Amino acid sequence: MQTIVISLGGSIIAQDKINYKFLDKFKKIILKHKKYNFIIVTGGGKTARTYIEAARKEKLSEEEASFLGILTTRLNANLIADIFNQTRIPETHQELKTIKSRIIVCGALGNKSGMTSDANAAEIARDKKAKFFINMTNVPGLFTDDPKTHKNASLIPFITHNDFHNKIKKIKYKAGQHFVLDQKASEIIKKNNITTIILEGNHQLNNVLNNKKFIGTIIS
Image 1 (cartoon, one colour):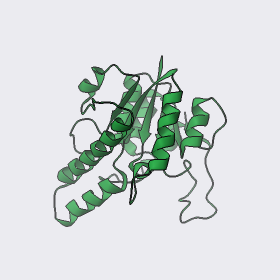
Image 2 (cartoon, one colour):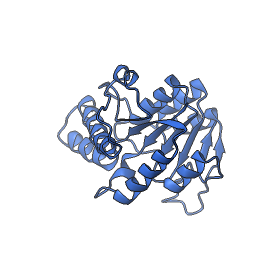
Image 3 (cartoon, one colour):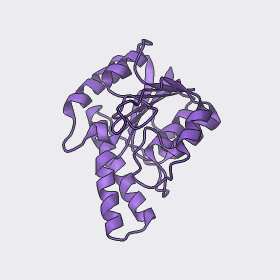
Image 4 (cartoon, helix red, strand yellow):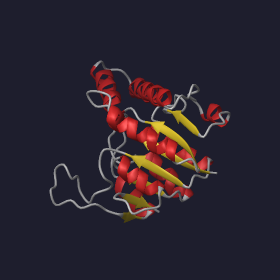
């Protein structure tokens, strides 16, 4: 059975409140597609950024700020795991290897400063030889410019690993960074030639899983 790894953005799970409508539909889609194993890696989203910002205001180190971000990914993982009735939530790659389940949910793995849920998801996709690595975020994909500030920005439906990596490596990394896919994850998918899909919403996810046309960005 093929594996699909999903990096589920924390900002989709919750902004000012939990996005129950999204999560209910997400659960139904995952349960419906029984021909795949799923590993769902949750991000920290707005909650992580709030804690990281507080840590910086209190003059904590970047390592301490990063760890707070890691903890928020695990908070979100506990919620998603409960939705799927999963009782084991791995916190390391070694723990992940011991779980035999069609659906596995986790947050960031390990406590290494600077590690991200996107990068962990990319590592899992590499180790599991996943069919796809899907990054679900709150924008429809990669754009030529920031669509929030540039009204003429257009969606990029396809981009090579090299071109994508060259595009984002210009952005200086810091804990809590918000982009469609971070630099560490980009390095991993490029090095291991992992087909990666960036998309927004359950409808597009369902289309991908049904091998139908979808709106998003393919990195290949």
